[in-house]
Structures are given as C-alpha cells and as structure tokens.
Image (cartoon, rainbow, N blue to C red; front, side, top):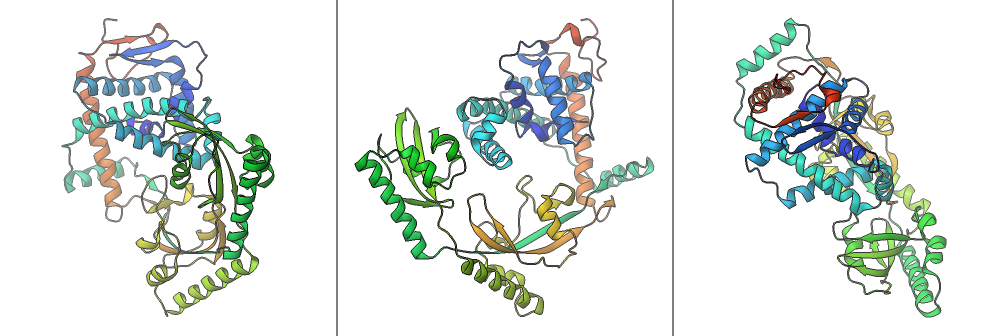
Length: 453
C-alpha cells in the first residue's frame, strides 16, 4: 500500500467524487493538516474505492487509509508553501480527460453525472476542478522532492536480488501489443441524401407549421436517450464533452433557430437553440443515421478477408496493408498500433482486457492474425476489423534481463517512496496537525501525534 496506489484512482477523480456526492450528510472532521481537511466519510469512501480498483487484493484499515490521506494533504499543503503553481490549462486538460473517461465507462455523459450524484455536468466539473488541482499540486511537490533521484544498474540488480532472496519476486501478467486494419461500411450517397432531405422536411414542418420539435425528435431520432428527454441536451458550453462539429453549429445559432442538417460520426443532425445562457447554450437535437445496406457490409468483409489472405501469403506486409487500406484515423499512421486508452501505452494486460476482445486474441501468439470480425462504434459506425498480434508476453515471474525496465521502475518507485517518507517525517514536525478524537487511538508509521497531543 503506497501513495502511488491511491494516485491511480485519485487521478480519475473517483474517490473525491464519491465523497462529494454525499452533499447533505453531516460529516465529521477526521484530521486537519495545515489548512487541508480529511473528513470521516473520506476514509470510508477511499477504502471502498481502493478495494474496488484493486479487485479486493488491497485491503486497509481506517487508520492506514487515514495516514495515506494525511500524507497527501501534507504534500498539498507544502506545495502551496513552496509556491508550486498549477495552471488553469493543466486543470482543464485533466478535467476533460476525466469526463471523457466517465463518458466511456457509462456510455453517456448524463448517466455519469447521475451516477456520481451531481445535478448537472457543471456541478461535476467544479468538483473535478478542485480534485484535479489538488492532485496536480501533489504530483508537482512529489516531483520537486524526488525529481533528481536516479538509479544505477547496480542498484537495480541489488533491488532484484533482494526480492529474490526474500522470495518476493513479482508476477508480471500476460501482456500483448496489438495492431489493426479497419474497413468501414459506408452508406450510399443516395441514402445520405435521403436522410438530409428528411431532416430538412422536419425543420420546415417545425418552422412553418409550428410542429413539435420534441415529438419529431422522439419519433425520428436515432439517439437512444431521446425517448427520455425528447432530444433536449440541457445547457452545453464550449468545454462540454460534445464533438467539435456539434458545438460549432450550436454556438452559431440564434435563440429559436434550427440549424441546417450537418454531419458528425453519429450521423446527420439538426439542432434547435432554445436559450442563450451566458456562455452556455440550451439545445435540443435530432440525429438520424443513414442505413447501410447488407451489400455494403458484405463488400467490406470480403475485401478485408482478401487482404488477410494476401498478408499471410506474403504478397503484402501488414504495415503496407495498413497504409493502403485501413480507414481508422487513430491507428493508420502508426502501422495500425492500438494504444491502451487507460494507460496511453501500447501494451494491454490480458487479465484486464475487454472480454469480447480477449476472446478474439487470447489464443493468438506473436505474429498471429485474428479472423475478420464485425464491430460497431457507439456512434453507429459499422466496420470490419483484422487484429495482428505484434508482441505477446505470457504470465511469468520477474526476470532481471527480460523485465529490466519494469524492475527498474519498481526500484525507482521504492527509492522515491523512501525519500518522500523521510521528507514526511521532517515536515510533520513543522506543520499544524490536528487529529480528531475518534482517530487518536490509531498507531501511525510517522509521528503525526507529535507525542504531545
């Protein structure tokens, strides 16, 4: 159990969000460190979240969790004392990425807002801004303390041998590197024109015949959430997690105006602007996705199956096939390499992989190819994919040579933790710490009680 363990889910904002959702609960103060407060509810929320994130592998007592939280508050306090600065752009970037993560997890931004107990996206953003500003302060203070620390190869070897002697060498899970070729099944031009004509017809009916935009949205829209809200998206602003084309159109309208049909990855839209609210816009929309014929799907599948055969036969390399045929913008320019959306790295832990993807690649060895398979995005894009196993490492006990980089990271993390522990011990003595009566019975690793409280 260490600071890094807590940081993993703090970066996502999960612990504080769960805590802040209990807005109406009367809460006790567990401890004050400098000007920073840890509430009684924080301890329980962080404990549960840590256990969930670790799949039950990490369990801690209330006192252990409290000490971890006190260490973080100490870092945050001294970051301010040391004049560590955090820019609005840095905070905004973290908030945007966190909201994007929540949206992927729940499939819908509003569902994420409701799941964490907030009134709207603005409430959630305000809390995330607070959380991420503190997280950045902590990270920068840690970097200030440990930034100059480095390891020699001899230190890495000694660290590895120490683990080996104590029979504590870690097990590294199976990891894979994957690349892909993607062929999309596109609608015909005639079908695109049909959808645009239908949206223009709806627009005209609302504008000229006073038809109900809400009813038109419920009857015609492909958006599954429309049945619940009649196409109303509430108030959005330029930082809201909507695709660029949608926001550009929404912010170009006058009150009461309906946009011309426009295209996004979700299909064709029209937007009705209800009200301008300061920097926000209250809007409703209708989205209609062009239908894709079975023939178009069949053609895409057959083409990709032929590409697969040509690669296996050696008539074309996988990388050249990606460059010539793949239609996925995110991976086309990197030889088809798929990045893990949660880590930003090229490797995937097989034990944490999406079950559907796991089923397609689990039996593949390095250099192997999946069968061609159908996939569909949340926006309704239909496509066929071919996966290539660029590299695979099976579950194994750590080895110094083959796992040197991972062992080096573990050794460096340990050295940094030891440095921060020493820094913590020194700083506690000069920092105001007030521990609530319910927690004075705790036995801490560091002298938080200062022996005279």
